[in-house]
Amino acid sequence: MKLSVKGFGIATGLIFGCGLLFITWWIILFEGQTGDTTLIGRVYLGYSISWGGSFFGLLWGLVDGFIGGAIFAWLYNCFSGVTKTQDLQDTA
Image (cartoon, rainbow, N blue to C red):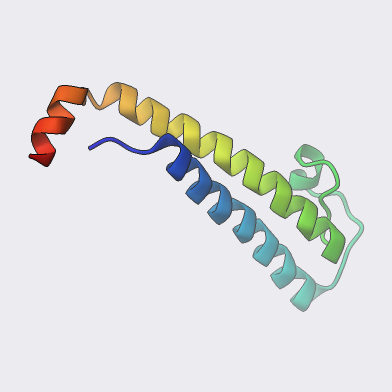
């Protein structure tokens, strides 16, 4: 079976971006906003545990998740050993 590189990238980007957004909202809900620099904030410019920072995290997560997912799907397709002729025979 062959993975769609674009489809897998979009799916992982959405999961990672929305996950970071909702985790940030969860922290704000129970602990409040902080201006402290987090480890993620050092990697993702603009991210902080705040309402505005959560949307920066969403955008960075979408991009980062898409790139990571696309690379994973591409590598999977390269190493799975599936050729186009095998793929056509499987569908028939």
